[in-house]
Length: 117
Image (cartoon, rainbow, N blue to C red; front, side):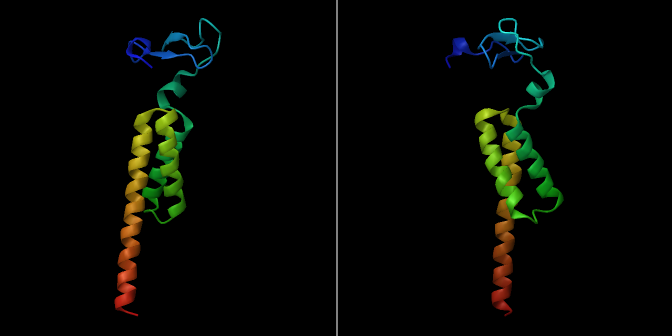
């Protein structure tokens, strides 16, 4: 997408159906009639939100489960490509930190068990 095709300000977006440049305050595309949910555009798509939720879930349970962190990391990466980037980045960071901490804890446990068999 060239600079001339990008929205002029953050209130503008392109209709996902017909490609028309739309003012962010309208609820219906003036060209094709597709309805838009204003809150959904602000929050972003499902992948980013899911990644962020799994990251917070992992913090609450102190990363006790590995699977949610891995899924959250994958969803965050997918969200970078399709959704709002801010929440995807936060989800990726949270899940990556938790995976890193789980690896450190596993190494410490392995070392302690090896020293004290």
